[in-house]
Length: 362
Ligand code: HEC
Ligand code: HEC
Image 1 (cartoon, rainbow, N blue to C red):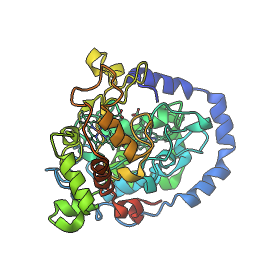
Image 2 (image 1 turned 45 degrees about the horizontal axis):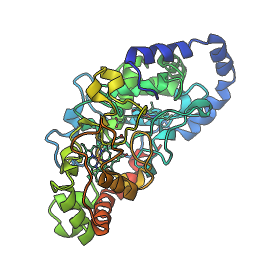
Image 3 (image 1 turned 45 degrees about the vertical axis):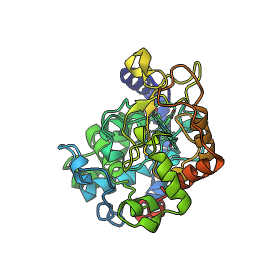
C-alpha cells in the first residue's frame, strides 16, 4: 500500500470499484460460491472472545474501556467482526479475506516481505502483526494514518491492491445474506451499513489481546519465567547502552511514537512524511509492540530483515546510516553473547496460547 493522503486513497478505491459491468459479471457467478463460503465461514458464534481477554501489564485502561462510546465492545459485535475477518466476501473476486494477510499462527502477520492482494498484486508494505492494538494512542498503520481501528477497518476493502471491492459493494453483498443481516441486527440494531461494518471489524481486532508469554509471567512476578539468557537480554533491552526501551517501552513494548530507526535508505518509503509533509518525518514509522515477534518475520515496514539476529545486527550497526535516522540509533558495542541474549529476550515474547486460541478461529 503506497502511503498517500486518505482522500486520494478513498478516491482511488471508489474509482476502482465503479466498474458496474465487472461487478454484474461477478454477481452473476457468485451465488453458488456464496453458498460454499457460508459453509467455511461459520455463522455460529464460537467460544467467547471477551471471556479470554487478560489485561496486559502497563495499560491502565481495561480492554472494554478502549472502545469508543459509539461502539461499546460486546460479544455479538466481536463475533460478527470475526466472521467478517475470515470471509473473502469482502474482496472483489472473493479470494482474499483479512485473514489472508493476517494469519493467527504468525501472530496475525504473514511470512512474506510484502503482502499480495487480489490478482496477486503486491502491496508496498509488510503486513503488521495484530496484537494489543486496542491501546494504540497515536494511529493505526505503519504511518499512523488511521486514527481509530474503525477508521482502519474499511481501508483494505477500498484499497485497489488489497481487497478492491469498495465498502458500498460490500454492504450490498452482506445485505443479500440473511444470516449476516440477522447478525448485524443483533449486534447493532440495524442492517449492514458502512459504519456497522467498520465497527464490527474493529471490535474483533480489539479482542486480539496477547498477554501470556514468558515475559508476561515474569512481569507478573515469576522470576524464573525467563531463561538466564533472556533475563540478560531484558537487562540489555532496558539499559541505556542499547536504548531499546526508549521506543519499545518496558511493559507495553512500544511508546506508540513514530521514528526513523535506520530502516530508511535513499528514495525508500517516506513513511509518515508522505502524510504530514514535514521534512523531519522522513522514513518514520510507528514503533511496533514486539509481541510474538519470533513468529512475525520478516521485519520492518518493508520486510527487509529476515531474522531477529538480522534486526539486532541492524541496531548494532546503527541502522542504514542515512542522515534522517533518529539520533537515538547509533552503533552499539555488543558482543556475540549480548546479541544472542537480546534475541533470547525477543523469543520470550511468544504467546503460544494467543497463536493457537480457538476463540480466534473461524
Ligand atoms: C492484502 C493483504 C491485506 C489484507 C487483505 C488486509 N490487510 Fe491489514 N494490513 C496489511 C498491510 C500491508 C498493512 C500495513 C499497511 C500500511 O501500514 O500502510 C495492514 C495493516 C493493518 C492494520 C494496522 C496494524 C497496525 O499495527 O497499525 C490492521 C488493524 C489491519 N491491517 C486489519 C485488517 C483488517 C480488519 C482487514 C480486513 C478488512 C485487513 N487488515 C486486510 C495487509 C492486509
Ligand atoms: C528510536 C526508536 C527505536 C529504538 C531505540 C529501537 N527501536 Fe526497534 N523499532 C522502532 C521502529 C520505528 C520500528 C519500525 C521501523 C520500520 O518498520 O521501518 C522498530 C522495529 C523493531 C523490530 C521489528 C518489529 C516488526 O514487527 O517488524 C524489532 C524486533 C525491534 N524494533 C527491536 C528493537 C531492539 C532490540 C532495540 C534495541 C537494540 C530497538 N528495537 C530499538 C523504533 C526503535
